[in-house]
Length: 168
Image (tube, rainbow, N blue to C red):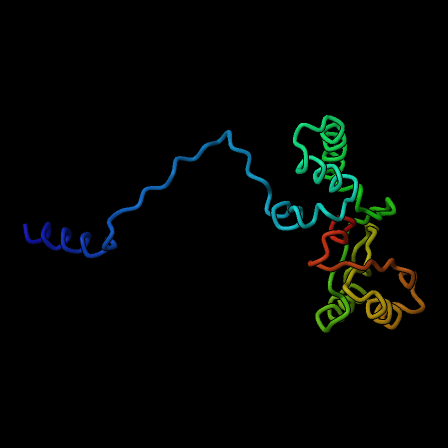
């Protein structure tokens, strides 16, 4: 009996003053966009794809414009495909090291040069990436000069630039 009173008091004191909140039921049929799409592919980002932005603007002005709707239906799948903003050269790498222009990148290059590339019997392709390609190239040239890896590709990439992330 004493234990029941203690549990009852404890459970009541844990409730917020407004009582319990209930969550809305989960609807599995509702399409939830991926966070990357939500963050980078908003109306603000869509403006950068001119054909789609123009079609959307025309639809805002006149929702019954069949030609604008046709253009929107044509360009929206291309927009979601991301090909319109890609400058990817088609080359694929097994591994891309991002952020190699700083101290951690230096340590990574040292480990790669002294351990991984010497101990790994299987060859693999790799590239270096960073926000400032000139700094990445400078470090690559210093660390890999005179080796077969001195021409390792350097890519420009920044986490706050979705175009470069898409190409990565």
